[in-house]
Image (tube, rainbow, N blue to C red; front, side, top):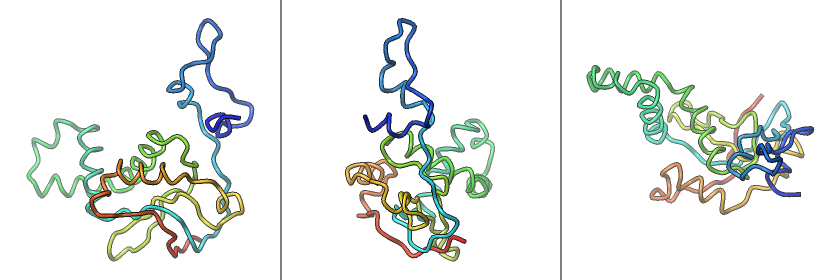
Length: 168
């Protein structure tokens, strides 16, 4: 079974073209992927740490997509405040963009976890110890490295690793 087919929800299949032939892979990826089941609690998670600077950069990108003309009307401080206020949307946006760019990365429902509220760091969770399925899911190293580069973190020598988390 192909990697993409293995991630499809049970009972779904890749879309087909009018002639009945399978759709190109890019169209097949738009089908909802299987979400890896997670337990209620976790105390360890493997993922990529996202700091305030990274989230601000991605928040700016999201803000420009959603409100392209608004930024010209705001002062620098007002714009910064607006972007910082979009943090919840930015966190979802980052996860969605990574999943879209790397379709073989396992899809978790709880994919963003607060690491340190004082430092404002979050974790893009690739796997955790909340369930056997979430702990044993395969995460390919080339996808992890690709996601780090995609997020713009390669210059910081950022890498995915196991972090102590508190998910209850």
